[in-house]
Amino acid sequence: MKAELITILGPTASGKTALAAQLCHRIGGEVISADSRMVYRGMTIGSGKDLDDYTVDGEQVPYHVIDIVDAGYRFNVYEFQCAFQNAYMDITSRGCVPVMCGGTGLYIESVLKSFELGPVRFPDRQSLTIGVKIDRGLRREKITRRLRERLENGMIEEVKTLLERLTPERLIRYGLEYKYVTLYLTGQLSYDEMFRQLEIAIHQFAKRQMTWFRGMEERRGIPIHWIEATLPMEEKIEKIIQLWNAGE
Image 1 (cartoon, one colour):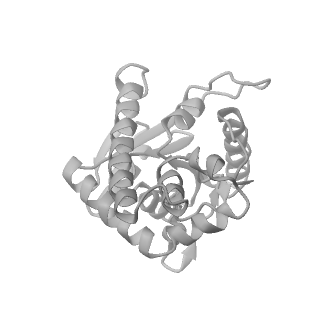
Image 2 (tube, rainbow, N blue to C red; image 1 turned 90 degrees about the vertical axis):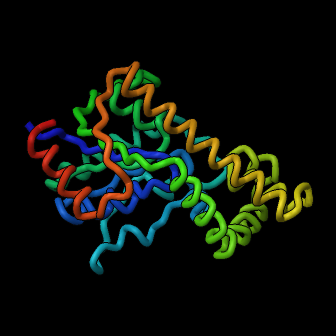
């Protein structure tokens, strides 16, 4: 029996967004983002929304739970559960396949394990869960390259715009790119210090993500089928479809 949900998870820079979009294009699916910062409007480059990935062969793959609240708002896990449920019901009502994709382990697990966090208890979701595994050295290389590209292509300007309506203290709470670029723009770090410290912080963040995913699999009973990030896209998609059709 096919799972009612496909979940694609992985650390930052593993290529999970492109994989989810390509898979959806192939099977008639729609992406539900499971990322704690992608919910915020105006936080596009720093949060790594990679919206161009949702255009596949000239067609737009629909996505959900992205750009749903203003930056500065304190979005929580229960609100994510509600947003996920609304998106899930909308997608399935139209006969499409929901594909949850993200790197925020707590958000993903709150759906798969149906955490009781608010007045409504949502049903457990039977999911085929795919993990994108990337070699540590390659991951570090991709993180560094992507960070340079984002800084050169508007991330600093994005943070400047956010600082026009948010205090530095509020923006720093979002961590990583928003923390360190804010410290640079407010004169607390030089550009080189900002880059070096941010690069280290992202590497540490990716390591924590993998620790969380291993805990999901080894201690909390969520089976994850791991796929190498370096496999050709078509091969990854075929493997996922085979697992899905087999009812894994």
